[in-house]
Picture (cartoon, rainbow, N blue to C red):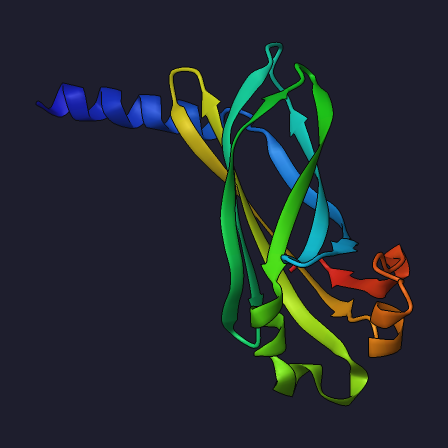
Length: 167
């Protein structure tokens, strides 16, 4: 029995030492405003150290503000990571209007929403199985004023989403 424990520990140690893909949220932009809500576009850079492409099983996301979950969801089967290369993924995140309006105390006088975007990139590594690469990004969304909404400006510029830094 002791032999099997040693073998198990040896294999676990070797797997832990293997290089693994790494992911970083590089940018979050305000993509648009529609009847459904606000749409954010997160750009994620993922490095793949392996000589084969790796399928991405799913991307899961959560947007938090004032310690409240304001949006969450998943994107099934978004593609694959290129072999021995960096892959740039664009993740669309939708935040319903009703939730944004419920954050009135955070919006306050500066007319923005402080947020944290948490992403989990679930990849399928051969032999190991599913591995989640967690990422977090902290920033603030500048909301359009009522005059901007009624005058037809429905797509704020990228300057309207301000990034602090990866959380």
